[in-house]
Length: 322
Image 1 (cartoon, rainbow, N blue to C red):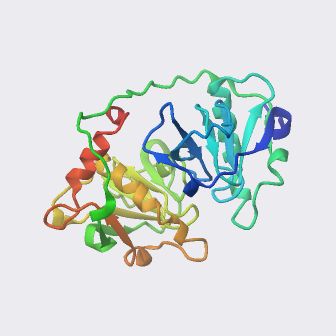
Image 2 (spheres, helix red, strand yellow):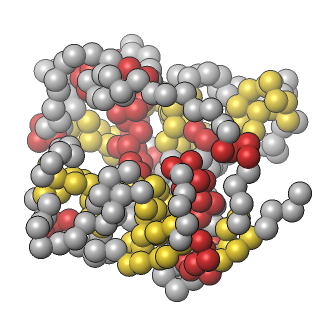
């Protein structure tokens, strides 16, 4: 069956956002009756950069609309479940017919799949409305069962972040760094091991491949793309293989601490904050990573406080589902 495509403007009304500057707004750590999400051009956290105080003189953008960045992280697209404000170079899409949450999420995915057409020098503000998207949504997607997440925290500890006393470390001080494997993609095997490459989707996994004849990296590692979609950091629980476009990191052996999903989820956003430093002509290969620095919480001995990192993630909502 051939998928029929249509212009985005036939399904959505595209409008420019509120165009606010975050530095001029009062921020809060969470959403409540006085603070609402501020959506920017980031590709992380559903596009939400902060929660800001409601200004009675400004009309918030209504919930159940899609936000699309037309510069910066071009075509980062998300469904917004709450009323929100937006930053510059952000459009929001109002469906021209009634759509379910599942349908809106599908179209956000379709829009994001066009990211490869754009770059820093080629923005989407003039072409967004002409973007081609499917006219119909596959039944398979509409009927896909999604497991409901546990909204509770893993622990009852109340922990706040205070970066004032954090310390800078060179990557080799805290991590064992290994470069990926320069190979052709191995033979596919649906029940094989994950193949990690330089993608920003699906935890870095692009295929499952045969185990024989490939270089295997042990699980409990973080993979970081050094080419393509540079700087995406993902935790790999199980053994895997990868391309040379990926760096593999573990906690340095001297700390006698094994990486787990909680510590990895604390580290990954800090690693990804370095993405802006690199591009196609200046890749984050292992040699440059060895010269990079990362700022981390420290314990009384001045070492990275792995326990704090783990406890902080466990204290967050939804951590019981990790």
